[in-house]
Image 1 (cartoon, one colour):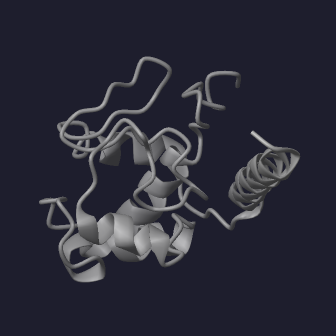
Image 2: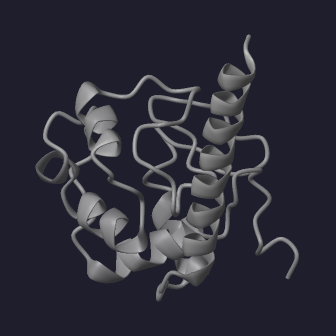
Amino acid sequence: MTLGDNMTVKTFAAAGFLALAAGAAFAQDAEITGDAEAGERVFRRCMACHAVGPDARTKVGPILNGVIGRTAGVREDFEYSDAMVEAGENGMAWTPEELDAYLLNPKSHVPGTKMAFPGLRKDEDRADVIAYLATFPENGVSSEEGS
């Protein structure tokens, strides 16, 4: 490896770190209006396919720890549809607004997604489940557990 190659690797690593930091900052500053406690009840509908928490494991769908602010289709432990990977490559990130639109009608929002769930029709249910998901950082330790 030459010095030039090393500098490229360092530049790439720094860019990745900055992107992660920006995502984390966005997740902290995003307007989340739902009720996380109510969202925990709504999330029961999601649990057949998704998991959150420190012991979360990949199921039919990806683990949702740290989803708020994350680029779509990037968890290494899940094989996403080509449509979801492409959405992420085109800049789609899971902001509360993006999650709200996706959870309303996943197949319409990302045509070709693997997600078979028809969506959450109630605005309040979507806001609540997004608030619940926001309590789980990447390590899965809910901020609600410290309360």
